[in-house]
Length: 302
Image (tube, rainbow, N blue to C red):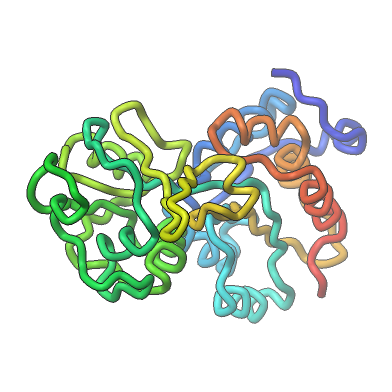
């Protein structure tokens, strides 16, 4: 696919050479690699080197100075921002690059039709802060004759932004049960749920396969169903939606090196956002995309 980048980038193509390093989110790994391929198509002397070890690894690498780019599927915490600023003397540049939703999934033969937020919380949490009166541990408690027996839980590990999102917005800030099987990536969660009829889990939309089914959120009062997707992500009707970020180590008043600048402008271009949609994520609304480009042009405040 031919990519048309801004004229100032095309004029500076001789500067766009070398290795582009990034450390961070597993959720963003596919997007980062596809954006990297698109950039290499435009600038053959550039290669993206990605370490996708989870969102929690991005601030650590940015603070240490071992990378300039940190993809994250959650916003940096105040402590992470403060540690970065203390180390470098300026804050990280935060760019929203896409939106995503997490799907609650079951085995493809599971007849479960929907879940309320309180039911989801009662299945996965120790605390039931979303309002359920009792824990849900068996499929019969959801009115199902099949599958039978104990509900087998699968989720992400604590290094992931996915884990944090479900804990904060799916469990109303509560704690996960100790018997949740934790996985390092969403693809592993999908594979585990697909292999076990009694399983339930959660994963990003872009990782889903025909071997699992998506369970919509059911409004506890109206009964209205809200499946994850672009419409409910933008409208705010789906609680497990999130923004995806690229954090950048950029000193105020100084330009980024050619590869990083070219990569970020590509990500925020119409072509880069079309890749977002191709890979099953939700692209940025036009006004928001333009605001991110303005932030990129200005850089972080000193």
